Length: 92
Image 1 (cartoon, one colour):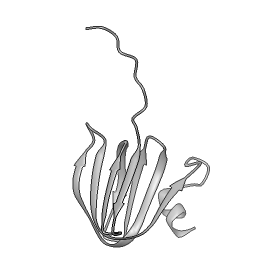
Image 2 (tube, one colour):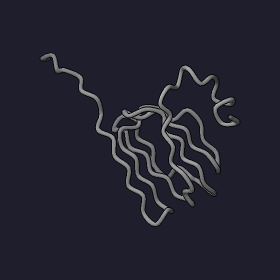
Image 3 (cartoon, rainbow, N blue to C red):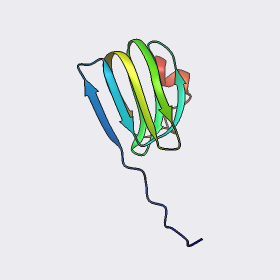
Image 4 (spheres, rainbow, N blue to C red):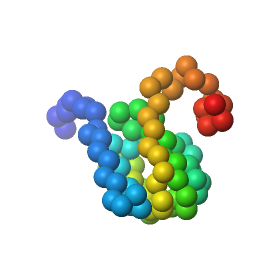
């Protein structure tokens, strides 16, 4: 099997009517509930906040995530290690 160079996953966001979110380039989902989803993407940590958020599809092999619910904000964290624990980041 020939050696293939690993390249970073592409990262895209599609938000439809603030009710359907599709994210590619997802490497890991750190936590989720009805109000917050925290995921590691190819472009950093993405925090999705809203109401009645539900993960409809998650494929870490392909790096795809689909969310339904009312999306209120999408936030990227720049330096994950420097800001402390997950709980302190949410409350800070």
